[in-house]
Image (cartoon, rainbow, N blue to C red):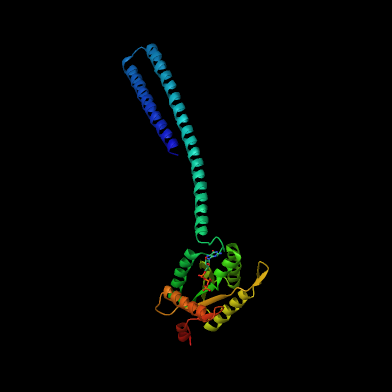
Length: 275
Ligand SMILES: Nc1nc2c(ncn2[C@@H]2O[C@H](COP(=O)(O)OP(=O)(O)OP(=O)(O)O)[C@@H](O)[C@H]2O)c(=O)[nH]1
């Protein structure tokens, strides 16, 4: 693009210099005609001189016209080349934008489970928190953790562990509707954000999910294996941050692990404020 602009600029400057030269020369001839008209009395001599000057003027006028036509041609060519380059740039920008968008999406997805990752969760938590501040609708933070997952890795290998994570991720994903959200927080831990449910409904939903996972017929090395999850849940309270809610859900999960595993515990403070 810069090259085209530079060439066009150079051409225009040259044309301007040539035009100025032609213009001066034509003015000179017009002056000469005036002089002849004033100073030559003999009609025949005057006629000869005038014909001479006018024919020179004709030639220069033609040159001027040719130069102007050439300039217009150069301009049209430059604009066409610039437009082509602009179109190319637009295409490049669109491809670049698409790549950036894909990259951003890629950066927010956990490659193993295809669930949103921890970065995506943090984005979503901020969004849900702002929504909560505006509308004060119930918002649940739920942390689920696979029980004794280390023993699956230890007994059946890391890739079996990976497959287990994929299957359980699917179960989480399929149990939720469009307004609900699940992310792989890390390792064998998942975080769910669920809006608007009452304590009882949430309890039913989470226990249904827990049982569904427990009933998945895992078979490793010809051995039937039951995989369970422990779940802790907390509802956001007035005047707390979503990080506070997260901490309470984590404490509830800790209790579920400690009490028996394969269990759902809803944070006590949440229950007290919901009665
Ligand atoms: N296969 C596999 N294992 C993982 C991955 N991320 C974390 N882990 C394993 O998950 C296991 C988690 O073990 P722990 O934190 O002891 O938890 P646990 O065995 O589930 O025990 P509890 O949570 O107390 O029931 C560790 O062995 C990690 O190596 C992963 O992406 N793939």
